[in-house]
Image (cartoon, rainbow, N blue to C red; front, side):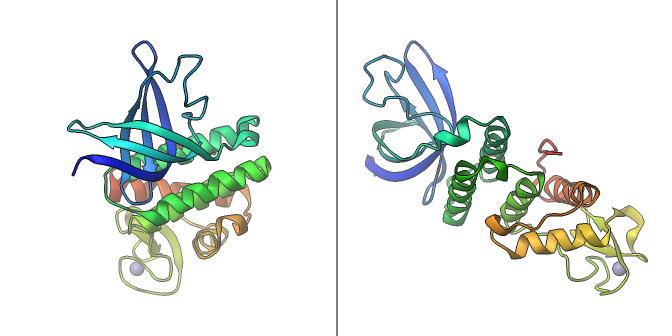
Length: 238
Ligand SMILES: [Zn+2]
């Protein structure tokens, strides 16, 4: 039913529209990804100030009409993440996080855990921009895969179930594979395997570190999983 909608949201993208308006891509806890228009934002005396920018976490009131886009009628800042914006690496990391969420969860299906994960990532980057590491970004993507029901199988061979000689990773099979099944796989060393298991099993703030070569293998595994099971190509981080 049309009417006012109150929700928190993270601004994923903010696109200039016409003379003074902006189109926003928002991620919300209960309505997934939504599009909204904010009118008159770019006038100097706009009541929205500068808060309809990417990475802002907002309390919003939206008007839902007949069209696809909701209209922003009020916006209060929950977190502006100003420190993150002042650091190039953290900014890049936040942009990639928002891009990945918007592409992997691009419908109105509610995923409150994805909203919380994104808020957590932005808060971590803002509290300490040095957290914008390769390991952090891979851990974030792994957690998105988990939320999408696409977490790679890591405990046993995804083809035959063997628990030993797990030497490769196959996006098509959906996880680690043993040396007998590794035809379509690429090598995944113990360090990379340990990283995938550790990153999935710990909070973002406690993401384990790993040598660069292991992170490169872990990244290849994540990208192969996204490509095979979500038909999504994300730019590599490292
Ligand atoms: Zn096997």
